[in-house]
Length: 286
Image (cartoon, rainbow, N blue to C red; front, side, top):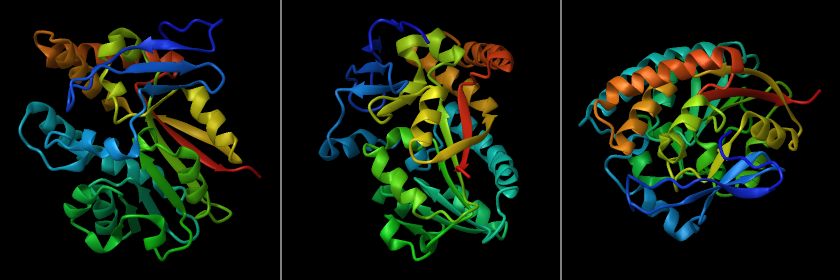
C-alpha cells in the first residue's frame, strides 16, 4: 500500500481524476480500522447515476470503438469460460446462479446457453434495456421469485454499491446451507496500484465508491458470518487496467507499456498474492 501512514487511522492515499465523465478530482481516504478506502466526496444517490452517463462506460453498454473495447470483449469471452469452471464446483443443490450487478446480462446469457439456471439483478435501467435475456434480468431483489441460489456472484460490483451492508444482508437472505458468494474486486495492494498511484484506472472514481484490500473484504464478510474459502487471480485485469492507467497518465505507446507493467504486476503477485484483481469465494461459517 502506498502512502499509508500507520499512525493515522484516516488519511488521503491518492487523488485520482474522473476521466470518463466529470473530469473532477476526488480523494481516496484510507481507513486503518476497516482496511478499506473510500471515495471522497462520496456522491449522493441523486448524483451517482450521472457518473455512469457515458457511451464509453463499457459494462453498461456495447461499445466497439477503440482498441480497449476490443481487448475488453476478447478477454470477456475467455473469462466467461473460466468463471463457469469456477462456479461448477459450487453448483451442488439447486444448480442456480444469481449474478448481482449483471450489467447488460452477458454472463447470465452465457450461462443460460450452457443450460445453467441463471438470473441477474441490475438496478441500472439503461444496462437492463440492452440485455439479451430480459426475462431473467430484474431491477431488484423483490422482483426475483427464486428464494435461494447455489451461487451468488458480484463481478466488480461491490465497489459500486453505496449501501454495502444492506445489499450484503439481502444477498445472504438468498442463501441456503451450502450457498457460495463469489466477489471479484480490484486490489488496493497490487503492484499496479502502487505503481500508477493516482493514475491507477482501478480507482475509477467516483463510480468506485469503496477500494478494498484483501484484509478489508475478508474482515467485512466475516462480520456477516461468512468465511473465506479460497481466492483466485484475475490475470488479465492487470493488463487491461495498466493499459487504461497508461492512457490516463498521457503516456506514449500506452498499450505496450501497459502490457509490460501488467505482466510485471502478475509476476510480483505470484509471491505476494496481491494480484490487480482478486476473486474471493465465501461461504457461511459452520
